Image 1 (cartoon, rainbow, N blue to C red):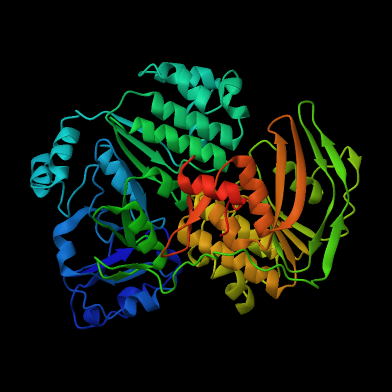
Image 2 (image 1 turned 60 degrees about the vertical axis):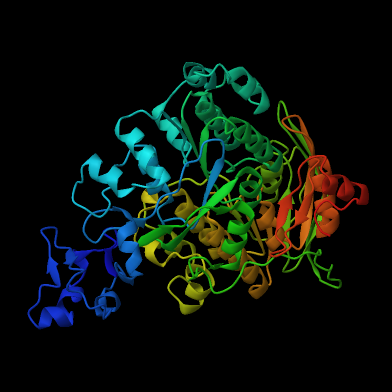
Length: 584
């Protein structure tokens, strides 16, 4: 089976000579394998296409994909976005009393699957406007048959937490309390706001909330509703590790008598939260295949190893690997600079910094709870805000990527071209554009990008500036596992090749583990006072941080990935007694 996919956003017929049509060998023999539509874009016949791939190579905008797929997928087609559109095969199966996880790259159909299960998108099962009876018959004999019947008759009530929480700001104005109270259909709002620690912000306008606060309000809004099916899309963005674990506990409690489905890229939290997981594989923007349910440990391990044995599919050439032991502390590395002690005061918060040393070519991870002063610290280092006592004393060129990214009305190409003269060179393409997968985004406007796309552009913009120190605030937000791995490799390789240093603030333990050589740990009382400790070597830093969080991690036997221990379990008690909270 062969499908032809046209990326209509990339296709720009006014800027090409219809090379796909001109060079197609079947068209030259008189067949109508490719015809030009009324919008001047090509329409490719999948029945006549022989899969030569000439059109994909000749298209100057890489807008065409010709993809060969196993014949058995033809019977599993769930939805096709029109002629030459994205194709989804399979669906995740909602199971009452369980948390079902969905894990896969962005652009492979996870959101499409959820739209179908939530009833906001009617699946066409590869046909032209099928009736609901045909759709229900298509799923006969499976657990989805009854579910589809319920969706068609509007018998299933849905509650959904969106991926992009900033959409709430566009749809609602008022206080968090005014948003939440009308949604309290289960009478659980008081308990939810207490456990999510948002009681103190309920009377503030939602436009004044931080990203982490707005995320918890969005989670409370979803969980307060009385529904049959709850869907949570990326619950961990902007939340610290303790907040992530607390949210996971609340969702597990909810799932005891409800149906819950979650899309999440933080593998430690997905592992802790989900009972089963569906892996999604495919070509982003082209097609996606949703596997049968797998045990959560097995599914995550297969995903990290890049091979699905039951499906006989190789997803990735290299496995994602983790270090069991802390990296050895390298001595005799020259110091890049030292920063002096300083104090930054706000009306309700004070940050105390004792000073420290940054080594040349190293990546320093920065960890700590939300509201403890991490973003304030790096803004002072970057010169964006001034300390109230002391002086930083850094005589360095610094490039800074903020936590929240501002969109502006210009293309990605124009933005990067104004930042660096290296734009367009083979060296720049190899070091930045290629690894961050930005080739196809260059002509898109920043206002049209998704959260993950904008994040990758922001990382590229930060690395494009000539600097001695690169500071990145939450670079993992909205990125899938593959993109986080690429970002880690890009940042580390860039620092090494350019003999520059980097400081990275993030809440994703996996990313901090894979990226950092030393660690700075923030402690104090969130929202009141914060203090900076370190940099430490990774073992000491992780132990200090996780001891404060009262969390331990064990290692998976096969992949060596970190897994959260259940509180007061045998392993949890043993590791705390040894003082080893992370590395073995």
